[in-house]
Image (cartoon, rainbow, N blue to C red; front, top):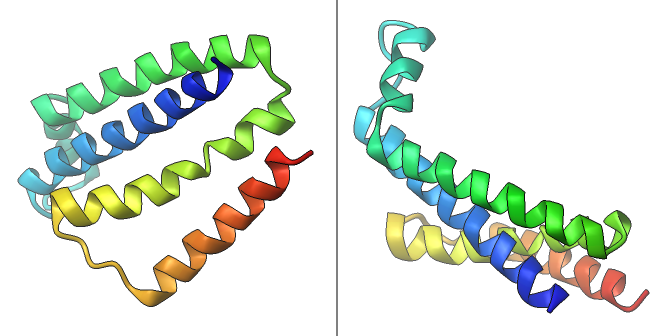
Length: 117
C-alpha cells in the first residue's frame, strides 16, 4: 500500500506541474512586472487546478510520512522526474534530449539503490 501511495503522490505532483505550466504558458512571458503576472496566474483555472493537485498531494504525503522513514520515502519523489520528462513531451510537446535522459537514468539508479536499503 505504501508504494501505491508514493506512486500516487508522485503522479499528482507531476500533473500539478503540468497544469501550472499550461496555465502560465497561456499568459505568455512576464511583461509589466512579476506582480501583475502572478496575479493573473493565480486566477488561471489551470494554475488553480495545479495548486489544488499539489494540496491533495501534500495531504497524501502526510499519510506517507506517518508510515515510512522520510529518508526512504523522500527520494522516491525523484521518480517524478521520469514521469515529468515523459508527460511534458506527450502533453506539452517538450523535447526529450539525450542529456535529459541520462540525467533521469542517474536518478533512477539512485532510487533503486535507496529501495534496496
